[in-house]
Image 1 (cartoon, helix red, strand yellow):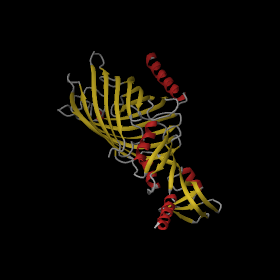
Image 2 (tube, chains in turn green, brown; image 1 turned 90 degrees about the vertical axis):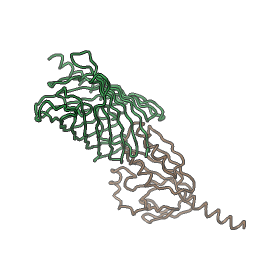
Image 3 (cartoon, rainbow over the protein chains, first blue to last red; image 1 turned 120 degrees about the vertical axis):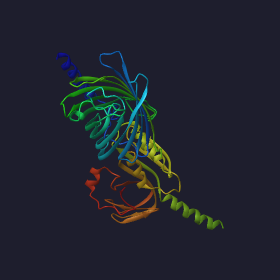
Image 4 (cartoon, chains in turn purple, green; image 1 turned 180 degrees about the horizontal axis):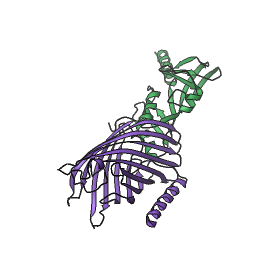
Length: 276
Length: 160
């Protein structure tokens, strides 16, 4: 009990530390998408790597997710990703996902904005179901529908998402083993970000270093079981075009069966503007 | 022959001098350099743009134009919006050649029509800074405060 509360206290302290330092803030979050849309006619390429520590074994669960992101218009973007993991010993293809986001509200002012967007995801996965956690990004087949709000105020960028997830049976005869009642969940997240460097913007070539703190949470509608994760990330942006994120995901509290909730996350991303 | 050439030369120079040579633009809704870069790259795709001088710190872009080109203010605004942001200030540097401006009276200068508002009746000569006040060229707050009637297509409410 004491250890759990210490973890939560640490998480709250970290958030306040992030909020109180006077720096410009960033909203290019690692684990969630902000309400802002990518530039129209831009294409982004991503390679996401999850290196997760499997509970009670020495095994590392590695998930490789390459992704392409397309800015259709200033309000609408669409992403496509492919899932690979080493669950069957060798790195194997397991499925893919289509994600789309539509920004329906935007209020801009100098150095600030408030935006809202709706998003949806449809995923297919043919791996075995081994945990109660529902995860549309490399584990489950199903759909996710949600809403995100992001506020950027000179010193702080905060973002929150709420989404509804519905898991279906996975491919290759891998049924969702927890029953229909427990196949629905709600995800809710809270993210905060800040710019550390440069202290003063001069040229586009300057490397930007941002740090983010995200809380990623799920509650299963059927069983009432839940988890609360914390994910700090360091992000570097090169040439105002490429990006590298290095993060750590840690479970703070959970009442559900989860195979490998703790581990590292590495993202490599490059953006092409005016690509079509 | 020499005299005809001179007249044509003057006529051309009048037409050329009657257009915007430069636009100073301030964008809103952003703080990061990648956001500024997406606006910078978008503006560079406009065929009438010669060069862009971007100041990441102040979110401003100084856009200079190719001589004798048609400068489309609405296309510039749309490029900023397509990048995901908004224009909060738009000032065009326009050369006037002894032009009389009257408050609330449309004035066609080169390829643009301006409706100057809240100004004293005056003669404009030389390069003047013309601030555009149409919707989408100022902040929503400023547009609301001004409460001008909606400008006709191709007409720009302006002050100098």
